[in-house]
Length: 48
Image 1 (cartoon, rainbow, N blue to C red):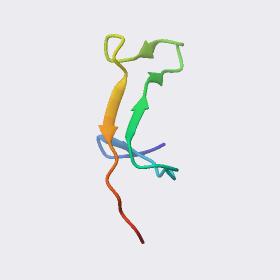
Image 2: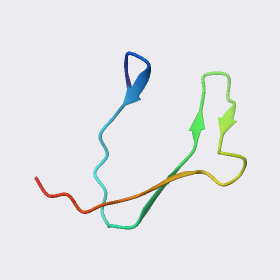
Image 3: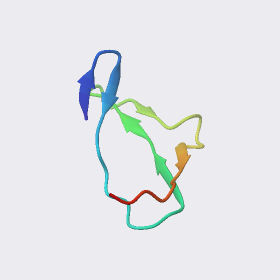
Image 4: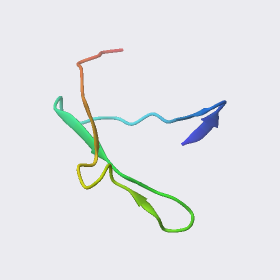
């Protein structure tokens, strides 16, 4: 990820259209997993 202003941005190639689940760990080894639910987003089909 790279910082762009107040955001962090990256590109990830997804192999299927479903749900993307993620959690984050900082440099102090603290996990942010959205209270055990992980962060998730639906994946929409987008072809380039």
